[in-house]
Image (tube, rainbow, N blue to C red):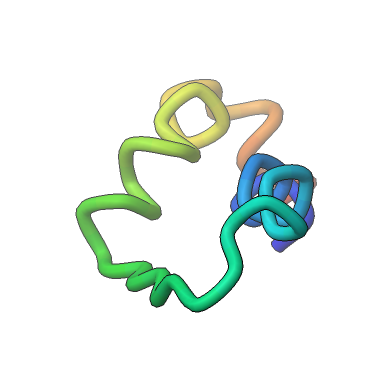
Amino acid sequence: MEKLLDDISFDAPDMKNKEIKIDAKNVEKKLEDIIEDDDLSRYIL
């Protein structure tokens, strides 16, 4: 979750009154490096 929300939490103070939608496509894009690395994905996912 931290990896997924890192950019959002950093930018949140400047994003007043904005809605953020996180869908499957965004999750896959953000976590693609971890998903592709079998060794890493075993321990993180």
